[in-house]
Length: 175
Image (cartoon, rainbow, N blue to C red; front, top):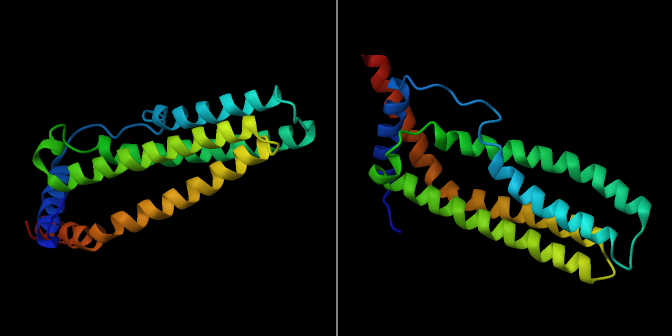
């Protein structure tokens, strides 16, 4: 998908003006939490499966479990925040704005890659001697690398988007 910086700027300006005029309710923090619970559920299913393998070290298993709970609470709330940004958009924004379509597709692809990496880590943990350490380590590293790749990927649009938001704000102040 090719899109020019000027088109990004114009579309973000239009979105910003629509949001400024919107009278819709701000979503709650927990409204969009289910999308973050899915990868956590996959992770903890493999986490519990590791307990029934040949290599089971109770102290490591329990320690990583406690740390994992904090990690997944953070990740679920973080994903919920991104999801809330999209829930504030007008209902037909995906049809009208190319930048929203691009972001939506990118989010879906990176989310699918992330889920796949967790599943691979889970199978590796169940069928290797590293057990829960592999699950926790690979999940953490893949989360970091995928988040960095996602941020590098969308950063190409951020400056043009910022200029669009500033332009919309300037227009609203001049009225």
